[in-house]
Length: 418
Ligand code: GCO
Ligand code: MG
Image 1: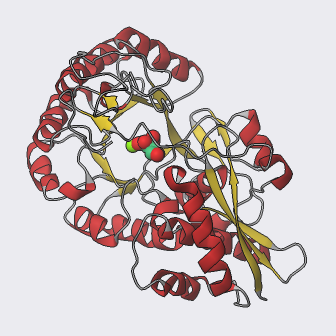
Image 2 (image 1 turned 180 degrees about the horizontal axis):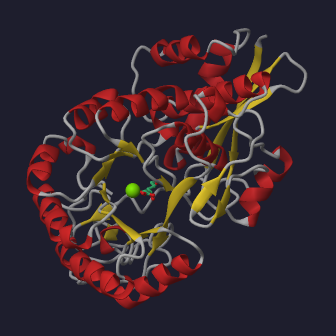
């Protein structure tokens, strides 16, 4: 069997740019799909796939996933980068999809078989104040959710995006905690998405106090710091949140601040999840081997696909670290399916982040996993069990803009990690 063509398909059914890779073969109708999404740099990933991976892979046997992965990885000499890792991820998942179709088995069977029928997920509640957050938490609970992540005013409590061109992720989350002291003008020398880390840090423990006082222990609760705080303030927040028994506290520190995890661990028993920004094995090896985190939540379409992710999961298992793969809106349904196959097959699965799959997404991606009763459910089709309707995908072209939400700034204008 031979690979005949490797293509990148760009589509945005929900307004978020997705990158999907299709690996075609010389066998009639046999192809695989993978997620290579890097929303903020989507067209560059597509170019890497079309200009470099397609010619590299044409004529090779898609069965040899492990060899092809290493071939793609070292072929550029420089490696471990956003964009190139995404491109590799798309191909890698597509090769697993092909292998599953050839074997007539779902990928979770290729990976050793199911440890569970479905994967517990967490949903996202936001709001302007604790009452509004609670209302949203209760809506998810009524819908069957078992775990809910609570934010107030978006990441870092930010609400107002100065340039207003791209308000995600705070679009639906009006100002809650921002003190309004920053130079909030689009014509400022430092336009950006302003937030106030101090106000944010002070607002979160009372939020959880309030929500817990209303719902008791009836749900797992989570929170994402999204690396918006100075390291010592993140440690202070982890300590302050201990009484509310979080399922986990996410991204308390930027990947560049790995040493701080040792101090965080020494001081707090709040469970820690980390990894959505990781590219390089050196970023997670020490965190896992020194048991500095409780959940590894890598973006599988960022580290190179299922091939490195299953090894990472095995490494984590031997150190008592569980998985919580990144599952935001900027992962395609193909990527969500890949997350789910691994969730089902890994003993050390913890929880899965997921989005609400709207009608447009489900139409473009037939076979999208089903969200029901607080769990994500697979189908039992061979491979990743998901397809891409290219005609429908073409109805939702992506737009390429300057990305505003990552221009996050403190009140004095200092640019901070988003
Ligand atoms: C999450 C994430 C995302 C990221 C996004 C970046 O936990 O879901 O933090 O919302 O911000 O994937 O593009
Ligand atoms: Mg996050």
